[in-house]
Length: 121
Image 1 (cartoon, rainbow, N blue to C red):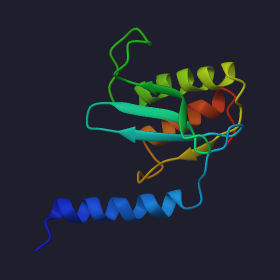
Image 2: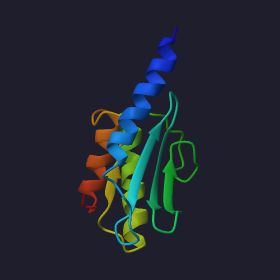
Image 3: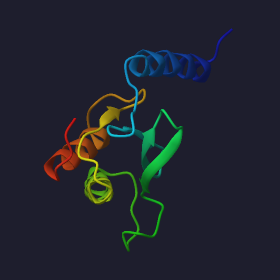
Image 4: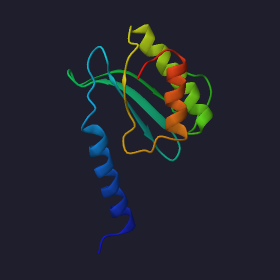
């Protein structure tokens, strides 16, 4: 018998595959992938052609100077930081990869803040 956790993992994997099948990051338009745990929020810009991470931010890093968690306010701070990092590297267009998360709450706050700071997607 399949447990609830196994069902959730299987469902999330199916959703992730469905989202990722049409998303691919290029050097001039990288894929920005997000991940959230129960405590922290992470995002990274990935060039899928070369298989490298171009830029990354997380609420666990000390770059922002204060302790951040996984709230929408923290996601806004991280969205601004990610936008600044990408613009400093000359990247203004991205492909947004929400993984298996629904587009609301923390994910939406992060994406909207990146748009407000000059990133197009």
